Length: 390
Ligand code: NAD
Image (cartoon, rainbow, N blue to C red):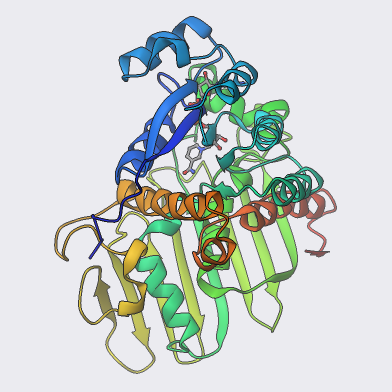
C-alpha cells in the first residue's frame, strides 16, 4: 500500500503555465500534484487572457499577485522572491512547449511538460542538454504509466514470465472526432492545426501514450517503422485523424500501433497486448485495475490490482492507494507519477543525484522518443509508407 506519511519539511513550491479555466488537462495536473502534499501550487500563468488567469487563480486559492499575465512575467517575478517557485508544469498547446520549457530551465526550475514536448527531436535534444547543464529535471506527463498494473506488467516482462517478446499490439483509438467538431471545440481546433499541434494530430496526441506504454513495459527499442496516415475529415489534412504504424524492434520483435480519433463508438480503446514465446499480457485503460495474463495451454487469468500475488517489489510510489476490489483510476495514476516527480526534484535540490537517478520517471528521453515517433511516422507516410530507420 501507498505510504501516506512520506513528507518533505516543505512542499515543493510549484507553478503552472496553461491549464486554465475550461482547459482539458489543467485540473488533472493540480489534482495529481497536490494529492500527497508534496507540491503546493503558489503561482500560475494559466491562461492567454490575463484577467481570466487572475480571476481563475484567485478562485482556486492563489494570491492574485502571483497570477501572471504570461510565463515570462511569472519566471522573472518568482525568481526575485525568497519563496519563489521551484518547479513548473506546462499544460499549454503543443507549439508553446519548447519555448516555455527552455525559459523555465533558464529560470532554474524543474519542469513537468505535456507531450509531445516539442515539434522536433533537435529541439527536444536541446532541452535535454540544457536541463543537464542547469542540473534540473524534465518530467513528461505520460499519465498512464503511473497505474500499478503497468508496473506489474513491466516486472513480469523483466522476469521472463512471458518468455521472449515477439509481438506488441498497441492502440489508442477513440471515436470522439468522427465528425468535424473543430468549429465548435477550440481544444480540437488547435489539435488539427499544424502550426499549433505540430507535424501530427493523433500520432502525437494519443499514439505517443500507447507507444510509451510499450517502451516502458518492454524496454525494447524500435529499429525501423512504416506508417500510413490519413484524414477522414478532409479539412484536417495534412494532419491525420487515423494512423497505422508497423514497427520492428531491435532483437527481432515486431509491433503495430493504431492511433485514431474516428473509431466511431469507441471511448478510448487504449490497449496494449504483449505476446511472448510462453505467454501474453493485455491491459486496457478503461479497466486499469486488471491485467490479463494468458499462458499458452492454460485458462486465461485476470490479475487484479492490490492483491498479494502481484510482485511486491513494485510497492512504494507505484503502489495502490486502497486495497483491491475498490476501483482506482486515472487520477491515482497521475498522482503516482507526480509523487515520483516530487521525490526526484527534491533529491536534485539536495544535490543527491544518485537518489534522483534511482527513481523511475517518464523523463526527457521518453519525451524525445515520442517526438521521434511523430517525425518518423510523417517521414514514412510522406514516402508511400516506406520503412524508415528509427
Ligand atoms: P486546452 O486547449 O484545453 O487548454 C490549454 C490551456 O492553456 C488554456 O487554459 C489556455 O488559455 C492556456 N494557454 C494557451 N497558451 C498559453 C500560453 N502561452 N501561456 C499560458 N497559458 C496558455 O488544451 P489541453 O487539451 O488541456 O492540452 C494542453 C496540453 O496537454 C497539450 O500539449 C496536450 O497534448 C496535453 N494533453 C495531455 C494529456 C495527457 O494525458 N497527458 C491529455 C490531454 C492533453
